[in-house]
Length: 308
Length: 329
Image 1 (cartoon, chains in turn cyan, red):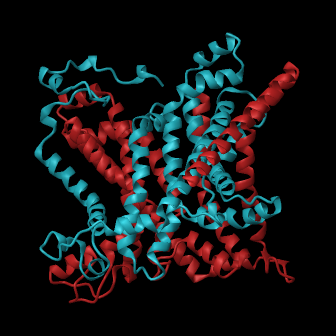
Image 2 (tube, each protein chain N blue to C red):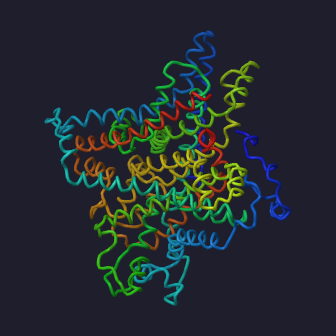
Image 3 (cartoon, rainbow over the protein chains, first blue to last red):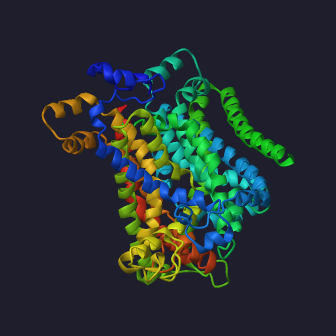
């Protein structure tokens, strides 16, 4: 999927006015827009949706600066309507000193390999499914697609037994393996869609030049598949970073951020004000990952679906 | 500091180990005769992926299927039975949960796609900067964990006795309008209102995902088809339904399927917000309670088997797409 498949802009002769709005920083693929299409109803409609979508976030942000009593006795919006306005960074300070720093590192230690390992294994598998002939190819792929829908709760009890039998004790190895297994069907599915839609001639010419499958994979397929790899990386990273259940079941000696957060809430939800600050702190990393990789996201996910 | 170092070591060892595994296997296979190499290499490539999926998903699924025909598992009274299936078809709570899951399936993918499409279409008409800003804001909830989202929405739904200062936004609005709510939203199951309140959280989380993909598809619609319709005098709304939507249909299907699979397995949101009480239970939570609280593995297993059976149509659609794509290459 190279730039050649993007719609060309030459066909519809942009007006000088539209030309002027096309700055160098513009990334969109669409032809320049006509000014007339952006009417007031459009702007107001969109503003309304965005505002509704932002209200819960704004509530969280405001609440994260309020104390325990304020949070439990009045609504967060009273800050704007002349209620008590004692805002401070105390919640953030307390959350960070309550072991959140260590959990942060643990979460990274879980999420990075739990993202990279399945990508690597799935990319090899996707290459084989796309460009190698072997017996059972079709039904093995069907197996992967089928397992896409299996709820991961199924695995907890059999796997706990298995880890004991095999003597696997490291928290991190258990969680890496579990996330790798649970994420694999989606990884294979997305990557095969993409790698399978790469032009046949490119792969065949590499083979004709004497490159082995292994070389073709590293020198050609991996660089060409960056968008799909990044798209899945976003999914898997968000999922492993935000995961609560898998960490709760398999990690015995180490805590990840979500578990620390849940403990902060306490059993009766008395520490709401702390949870709000904690929730904001944990959102930072996924947001950085998303905005860092987002330009690949769309191209990676839509190959093989947008174009038939 | 020690943590950072051991964390980094773990990351390097974990990722490096997998690289060495692939390299080593490939090295071995390349030492064999050409014929053996051709035969074995595909399996070296899919082997590790197949192994983890086999151990972590297939093996537990088979164990679950077998367990669904057994009772008193792990005790002296362990026996084969069909009682679990009888339970599946007769239990009232379970039927209720299936109804709730059905409501989730019906409303969440449709809601997320509708909002995503609306934003994608409207934002496409703004100046690039504003398009980017508004899309980023809609996407932001994707970065929030289900547990986090549930807490965030508690600031919307939490209810206090009428007359007292409300700390949840929605009850506060009703009270401000002089029409206070007499029951908490999350406990009000008439017309499944509370289930709908829960699934709104999921729509809030997933609309951004739908929007990103749909927006890309809309930008791929050739401008001349839209221009032609405009010259023919079609209104913007007609253009949207008759020109744009048919051309992005395949993306709509992909997005709907992805969200649908997610919703089938929904667990965290009802778990955190209502614990499945007040008629808001869902299948995954019923499973969790049967397995980990009631310790009735047989009954828990049958619930999962039912869940997997429900997903068969979507598997079929996916496989059909795979075959169609194969045929076109």
